[in-house]
Image 1: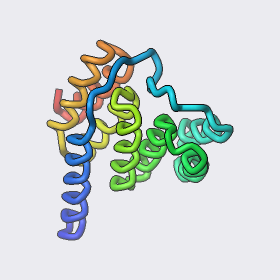
Image 2: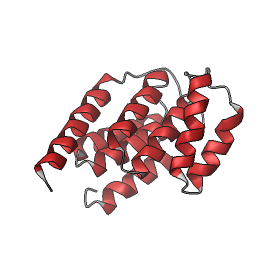
Image 3: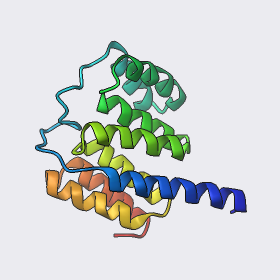
Image 4: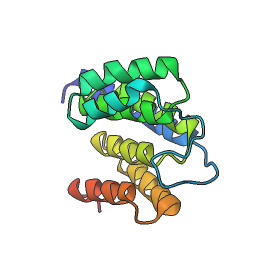
Length: 158
């Protein structure tokens, strides 16, 4: 790892740590990825999600960026922007987008899982474990909890 890359990784790690610390608990969780009453499905959201699901992350970012321009309170769209950015190793953007999602909906299960996976990618295992504990308290042994736990195990951090 070069000094420039170390510096960049440290900046992202610091940003993620600061962002993680800034999230605050909210009320309740329903069965979806988000419990935000402000999330109204924009026409492009389904297309952006389909692009992300298909691994077309740059296309997903383009589509979802338009969604959040039209609806800045859409935590689900911010979360998928983070996911797509993380998959493209654009870690600073991913951290920023997960933070937006979690500011809008601190109990967003998907954002907590994916942010935890970002923490693993950056070597911030303690933060990933904190997200895992948060998911456990919010949803028990739900899919997001199981997926983050599996990611930690795969990283040798069970």
